[in-house]
Amino acid sequence: MESAARTLNPSRLARVAWIPLCLLLAACHIDMYDQPRYTANQPSDFFEDGRAMRPPVPNTVPMTDEPPDSVMLTGRANGELAVELPMELTAELLERGQTRYNAYCAPCHGLAGDGNGVIAYRGGIQVPSLHNDRLRTVQVGYFFDVITNGINRMYSYANRIPPEDRWAVAAYVRALQLSQNVDANDLTAEERQQLGGQ
Amino acid sequence: MSAQIFPRNANALVWVSIIGLVLLIGGIVAALVGLYLSPWYTEVGVAKEQPVPFSHKHHVDQLKIDCRYCHATVERAAHAGFPSTDTCMSCHSQVWTNSPLLQPVRDSYQSGESVVWNRIYDLPDFVYFNHSVHVAKGIGCASCHGRIDQQHLTAKAQPLYMGWCLGCHRNPEDNVRPRDEVFNMAFDPRSLPLEQRVALVAEYQIPTDGRLTNCYVCHR
Image (cartoon, rainbow over all chains, first blue to last red; front, side, top):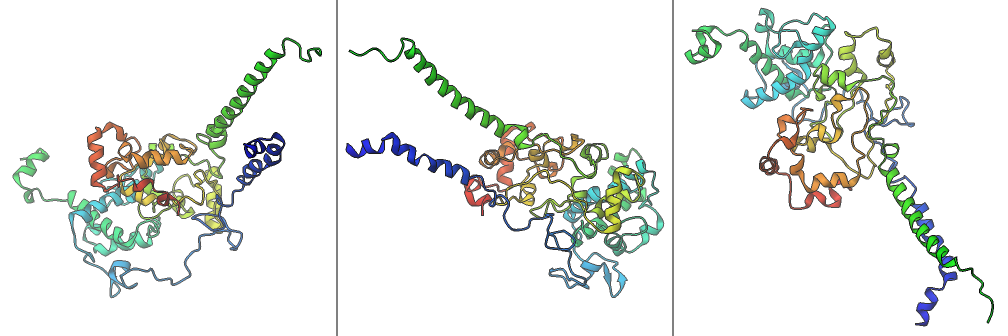
C-alpha cells in the first residue's frame, strides 16, 4: 500500500512527466522516412549531373541469356536484317505484340497501321502507312531495327520496349499488314459472309 | 469553525472546469486528427507546381495515349518509370514545337540536364512498393491513382496511409479487375459481381491466407 501511495504522489508524477514529452519529440525525426539511400529518379549532390540514376557506361552489355550480337538483340544475322523471328510465332506473341503496338505505335501509326494515329492526325504529321509494297516485302528484322534505332522523325523506342516485345510488335505488324491485304479468294465462304461479300 | 474559504459557486466552477478540460482535450485531438486527414497535410487533390504544366487529361483522355507509353517500366519494375526528356520529345520534336510551355523540355533535350519535376507520390523509404506485381495481379492504375485521366494538373488521389493499403491487402476482391482492364481508367471493378472478383483473386493467385498483411510484405 505504501508503494502505491508513493507512485501516485503528484510531485513524483510531475518529475517523470517529461518522459512522454521526450518520446513525442523523438518521434519527429524523419531519417527513417528519408533514408540515406537513393531511389529511382532521385536527385543527387554526389554526381556531377545531379542524378542518382546512372547511365550505363559506353559499350555496356545487357545481362541476358542472349549474346549481345544475337538476332534477338540486334535484329540482324551476319549483318543482314533477319528474315525470320528469333522465337516461335504463337498466338500469345501476337497478342503481346498487339498490346505493345497499341500502346507505343498506334499514337502515330494508327490502330490499323494506316498512318493516321491521333498524334499524326492532330499534329498534322505525315506518317507512312504500314500497308505499302515496300513495307510488305521488307524483312521482319526491319521493323525490329526501326523500333530499336528509330528512323527519319521517329525516335528510338529501345529504352521503352524490351527486345522480346519489339519482335512481338514486328510479328503483329505482319498480322496487321495481312489483315489489310488478303485476297478474297483465300477466305472461307463463312469469312466472306462476315465481310458482307459473296 | 473557520470561515468558508470557497464561495458557494465554486462547486459549479469545478464542474465547468472539468467538463471544459475534457472538451478542450477532445477538441485538440479532433483538430489534430482533422489536420492529419486534411489535404493541407495529405496533399490529396492539391496540384504541385511543375516546370511544365503537364495534363494527363489531355494526353490520356483526349489523345488516348496508353499509360505505358510514358510509364514504360510499370509492368516489369518496382518503379513505374518516369518519362525521360527523350520520351516527351518523341512526340514534341514534331508537335507543339514552338510552345513556350515546353521550353524547359527542349532546353533539357539540348543541354542533357534533367527537367526537375516535383514528386507527387512520395512513399516513406521504409515502404517497399512494387508497381509490377500490382499490375500483374489485376490492380488497375485508377485503384490508387484515381481518375488521373481527368486531371489537368497532377495531384495525389490517396493519402497513402497504411490503413488504406491494408484495406485492399485484406480484401483484394474489392479492387481486383481483369488484367486487360488494368490500364482502362474508366473501368470500375465493382461493376463486376463479387463472385467474379473472388474468382479473379483465385485465378491470379492473390494470397488470401493473411500473408498479404504480414509486416514484411511492405516493410523489409
